[in-house]
Length: 238
Image (tube, rainbow, N blue to C red; front, side):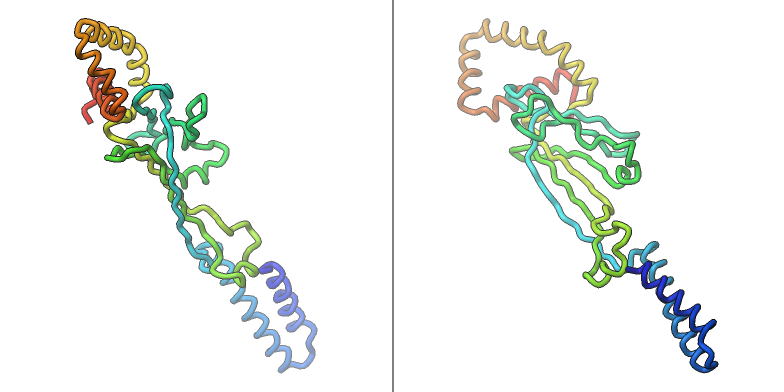
């Protein structure tokens, strides 16, 4: 609509100064149409630079996520890869669907839409929670009302992304957050650790029975024990 209004005001201004013969009417009509044209141009300019006819609307969505590791493991796992150095912005690997065969790589930068990508960030935190989840907070621009949408809504500005930030929260006792190098080390050393554990339990039948009972009666405590052992193996102190 703003383009049509500009075109009409340009024609009116041109017509007023060129074709109206009465001097008084010519100047009155010309000045009025020119002022309206100038006001419209200024309004469009500020809309382009400052989005004055729009407002920011923020929404948040939280959903549960699932382990990137073996689904039958008693503990959960997420793999992290920082984008850049000391950015606190990550690509995070986990399952979005509990039934997925393979984990998903989330928050991977889209090289084909770099401007949109720069508005999106993701990080994680380890907290005293029972389940892992991701909370995504999104801020978008929308027109303040239908009138301004009618006037300026020609460039796809409605619902324009301002910023999007995702925070993945994982249980501190029953989940591991590992780098790719740590995953590789765990894969290499896990069989030896498992064999050592099995040998120790075989040598101590009473302890083996206690562990089996713990796994059935208190899966959370059993998972916590597994996580502690893996952290010790990988030298994780957090």
